[in-house]
Length: 501
Ligand SMILES: C[S@@+](CC[C@H](N)C(=O)[O-])C[C@H]1O[C@@H](n2cnc3c(N)ncnc32)[C@H](O)[C@@H]1O
Image (cartoon, rainbow, N blue to C red; front, top):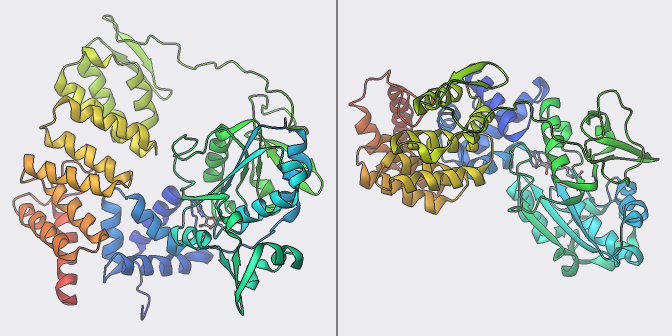
């Protein structure tokens, strides 16, 4: 890239907010240049000539995991090395395992593992502390938002810089020098780690699908320094759900003050500080725990709303926590309420209300709209499994309904099931050859796959259909996008392409 392009102020604010919300990354004023540079590079790799057009377009549709990954590759910082905060890693073997029952499974998750030095250090130490680790079945999972880092981690190739604090004997034992400054990690250690993509700012964990459930130890070190407190609290709450009852969390020493003692307990075994699973025995007045390995104290779940679970024939007062809404047995009441909550982005409440609807008693047209709102709400809350589940139910109601198929395709796309999404968008166009957003989405998909010719064909078709629409009309299947705006976006893309060829 020759020169960095400037980003329009309003657009910068929007993308800054988006990156914070969807990726957890908070760029302070001091780091504004880093964000602008990253966006310029990402835009180039998405195939755009103009960074502002790229951002506008990205902000106008739901992002795929693929797009988030590409952007993350340009925005994340990858400083790490073997044996970093060594005392913490040793604590696992010298303290934690000693208190566990032998012959049990121990699951460790390095979240934000970068290029692999952290999980590999644990695997090496596990060999070095074999007298204790051999008594357990240890599984190490490693995830990061940056797919380039993950690829490097899987390769297991490092330079001296990564090994700067590792004792020479350990380097000799576990690495083979293959160049003047190139060291390859022993295959047996590499095979111990399962690397995967995971965005900590999403709500995709805990989950059996990515194996982030029933964990004993989570490491999230030198990641929170890039997050805002609100995001940190959200991530830590999720970690708490991932942990087994004696589970612990490590953050870097500099990040310990960022962990709210009301979310996790704190154990100090100088010089190491770890955070312990909150089994429900912490409250605002209590001092933090000083010992982890206590049996979990059971707390009774005390639901806020002790309301009826089915629409009654009489009026029902539904308390959403923010307002009380009167419902009758009329199904349309529910629909109206869900639409209203959706327009206000109150997705959690939608899912709560949905639990109380007896869906089998509802006619198909209303059922379709309810499912559509619910699966979009699951998707917005980051629960892609449930979103996918509900979108399958939605298409099952009427397989020939293009709108239902479109919702299903969008969920597949968000879940990064690109091929399937492509097929379903094509199905929408078979059912409704004038479905503008499907042409647009297919155009984007072909862009991701660098199939420029097909992308342009779809964009052109969307553009020509848009001619018939009033510019101010909000397009179906979008929240805010007007026909005029989309026409403008596509026109810029087509023009940029023409200039390239
Ligand atoms: C400075 S490195 C820390 C690596 C390692 N944990 C350590 O302490 O040496 C920060 C890592 O966090 C990752 N990261 C940043 N935001 C993330 C997110 N939202 N989800 C997952 N990983 C993220 C970055 O890609 C990067 O690899």
